[in-house]
Each structure stands twice: as structure tokens, then as C-alpha cells.
Length: 115
Image (cartoon, rainbow, N blue to C red):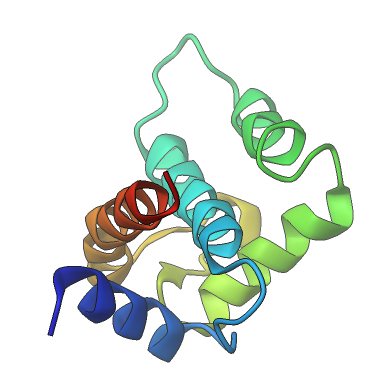
């Protein structure tokens, strides 16, 4: 079994998605969500929580507040994040931390197959 197939299976077994249509775009969206939590946890004094929120909302979510919340709720429901006192201020679970390189590899492989 190829590494990409393994990555795809891990991703689609954790999130309630079927994998048809544009799986690479969904992987990129949820990867951005995971990186958001990683970034939120590692913020320095130079970046406010609102700036970190806007990094995801205005970036990968295209300015959509609804999509921003959907990404956060989905990652939380998949146990890739810990909710904390507010879902936007949560943090990655160990499984969520492991998912970042898995998605990065899967996205890179999908892009290589398409070129």
C-alpha cells in the first residue's frame, strides 16, 4: 500500500468525508485548521488571538466565518483538537499533531500526481 493511500485512509477515517470531488482541497482546508491550533498554541507576544483567528478565517476559509466555525467544530468532533473553554482557543491533541505531517505528505503526493 502506498504512503499516499495510507495518508488518505487516515484522513478520511478521522473526518466524515467521502473522498470524492476535491479531496486535496478538503485536506488543505483541514490542514490549515490544524496549523491554526498549532499557531494559536505557539503565539508570541507579537500576535494577538484575533490575528491568529483572522489568519485562518481570512486565509484558508476565504473570509467565511461559517466555514471557519465548521472547520473548528469538525476537527473537535474528530478528536484532533481539545475544545478547552472555547473552541477557537483549543489545542491539538497528540493525534491532531500527528495528522499535520500526514496531510502535508498526502497533499504533496496529490499535487505530484496531478502535474
